[in-house]
Structure formats: C-alpha cells, structure tokens
Length: 297
Image 1 (cartoon, rainbow, N blue to C red):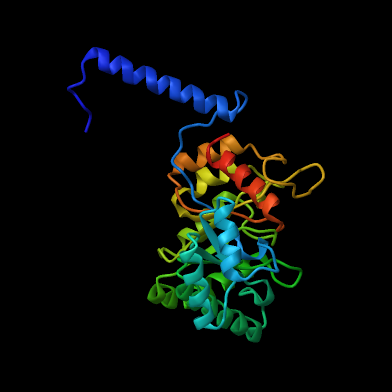
Image 2 (tube, helix red, strand yellow; image 1 turned 180 degrees about the vertical axis):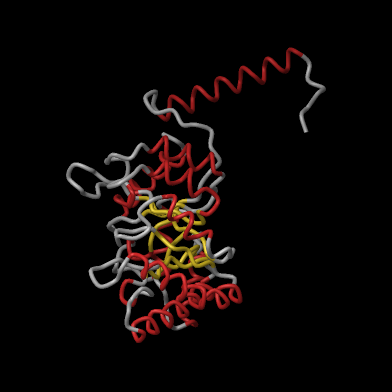
C-alpha cells in the first residue's frame, strides 16, 4: 500500500535517492546496454553441460556458483537414483525443473508398432523419472517426417500415441511438452498451436526452442502465436548465413524482441541453455549472457 503520509521534502529526498541509485546501476551495467524492467525468468542449464568429471553434488554446486537457478536432466531409469539426483539438486539450490527425454531413438510416428511400443515405454519411464526428481515436465520430440512417413501420418500417429500416455501424465502430474525441432514437422507457429490445441488437455503443452525456428522464421513471431501454450523454453542462437550455432547473443536472433514477446504473452517459466558444456569460466560467461537476455538487453 502506498505511503500517503510523505511530505513534499521527504518525497523529493526519496526520489533523488532513487534516481542516484538507478544511475549507479546503469553505470555499472554500461551505458550501451540498458535493461528493460521485466519480471525475472529463472535460468537453467542441462545436466550434461556440466563438467563430466564431477559428482552430481559438485556439479550442482558449480551450477549454483555460476548463477543458474535450475537443472534440466536426462531421464534416470532407476527411480531411487532419480530421487537422489533430485534431492541433491534441490539441496544445492538448483532444482531439476525438467527432464529432456527427446525420443529420437523410438519415435511415436514410426510405422513399426514395435518401435512405437518401445518409445511409449521409454516415455513412461521418463515421466516416472521426472516425478522422482521433482520436475514438472518432460520434453518430447513427437514425430519425424521422412521418405517413409508422410506428414499426415506423423501428425495422426503421434497424437494418437500421446493421447494414450496422457492418463499417466495426469496421474503423475507431469506435463508432456512437445518441442519443435529440425524434424520436418510442426513447421509453422500456427500449426504448432493447432497441434497442441487439438489435445485439449492441460498435460500436453509446448516446449519452445528459440533457436530452432530461426532457419525458417522469427522466434518472436512464434512466441506471440504460441502464447500460453508454452510451458518451457530452450535458449540457443543461430547464424542464418553459415547455418551454425554460435554462443548466445552472437547469432542473428533479436534477443530484446524475443524477451519483449515473452513478456507480452506472460511467460515467467524457466529458460534453459542448450549448448555445448564447459568449465567454470565458460559457465559463468554463459550465465551472464542469459542474464542479459532475460533482462531485455
């Protein structure tokens, strides 16, 4: 509640102090980069990006030291081990928020029912692993269009088999988040939105990868179209001319416009870097780059 008892002198004193404080902050940030006042977005890193030689507790401690807020983990089939990983991450202050299952090895769009059955079993394992770790979603690549799998077949098969998995997702309270990737599928924001909407189920949402659409679109456009369907976000950059994946903020993405779009649709969830791993210096630099992105710089 505002303090209506301030007299003019006290009001001016407080206002002057605020202006001075803002000037100090701006000077520290650098005159060339001015952040917009956006709500904070928690920043995460994928478990496999942390140094391979460290134990999980040491990996999570390093992630926290470098400024990250959470972890995205691969599935851990042994649920006792999955729970231990989740407990260790929370104890370090970087909870596991998502399980990056993927699904490339056994796609739900495959014409071979044995492959589909293998994929569904793996998704069930990923869902249970996410529950044990304390995550709230799994990332799923829903389908792939190939010379043997028509677009309509990929669409219909993947939806059919995902619907068969949704009762378990609801039971476990774990969202299945489908991601747009380079799989010749879900090639426009309109189609991605339609694909999600046709489930009409809160346990099926969109996992939006900012970098994956740059070769054929603009991420800010996709964000504004997908809107509230987005439950999680991957961050990576892209160079159109060379078709390479540079470090964050070194590619062609208009990051201030992307951040503005996320604010417009009310997205406040995790943003997770999906890049190569590295040592402490690399991870600290990456964390700083992500801070600039979520600040609208």
